[in-house]
Image (tube, rainbow, N blue to C red; front, side):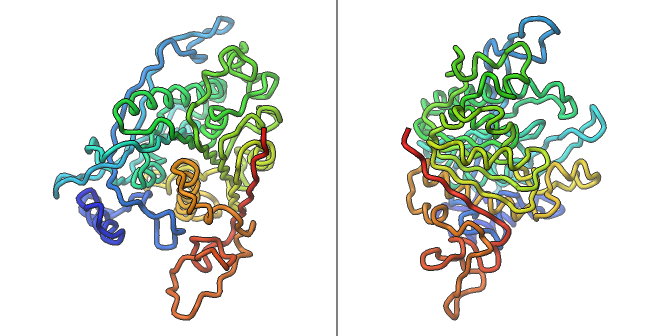
Length: 443
């Protein structure tokens, strides 16, 4: 893939990628950032090769609840965060472009144990970047997740002209439920710290345009990004009350340090499987404080972040933001990670990190990529041609219809205009989804 020139057609790019991966991997697995043949139109890769590198950022004197002894004031120390950075790269000479293979682990069912996995990638480690001035996208994973499991999103967006920074939040194991308060405190702080640091550093290098920044979060990361985007936490709400010793109160609505959790120059925010509730944690005033365009993605059978109490509430409550809610009917919580790696197939616990009980995961990934691309291109890059992929669609995808003219290829994409089949979807490939949209009210 990295050997191909930018002017080549997408077919040649994908053919080159498939060849590179087949030559490297015994099982010929394809990177999850490369969508399948039934993917909606905007899911496909962009024209740029992709590079990846890992940065180390240090948040000086950061608050830490896990290091605090019972009954004592919260501890402070230097918090080291690794950040995986994907970016548009220059093509390399033949034989020098070795695609990355990502390695990570997730907590296993047995307390203290973990399962190691790997995922094929298309990015080249430390490849030289291609130009600069790109929008910056900050990605925040869920509780005990790994950035490797989000490469479906990070690589794909980088190929389309975004610099994507996924934070390794160094969470405690998900089995340690007492540590949840640390995540509620640290998620928005980590996101704001990383965003500000990279806006300054990468902006000075010319790699990004710091005035064009977006946030994407999954599960606990979704809680973090809506908070960092401007939804103010209610000091009497469930989240603030769940954090001991009032440690979150200075960052909540009206707190002296509220500005420290806010990301500046923000153009769009995407929240996948939002957790935290709406009224219970932010309240009506807190949700109404969000003014950044918002895309919510959720399954209506989510047993981890109950659908009815989360995304639909935020859809109605964030009244000053242009907003959308994409619902997967009958889907659960596992909407944010890649299709299951081979090493995670041995137990139902491991499988459940990645796979939905009803939906094909590669299908979820493709649909997510389609809508996230349309949303970011429109609100971050200012490409109004993407509005047709988001606005005015029939709410229930299954109600869409297209009588294609004779001779239309079987895999053709809906043109949208003049037909009700969702623009960019193929015939008989737009079932089981709902899209709601709301206009922003003037403050």
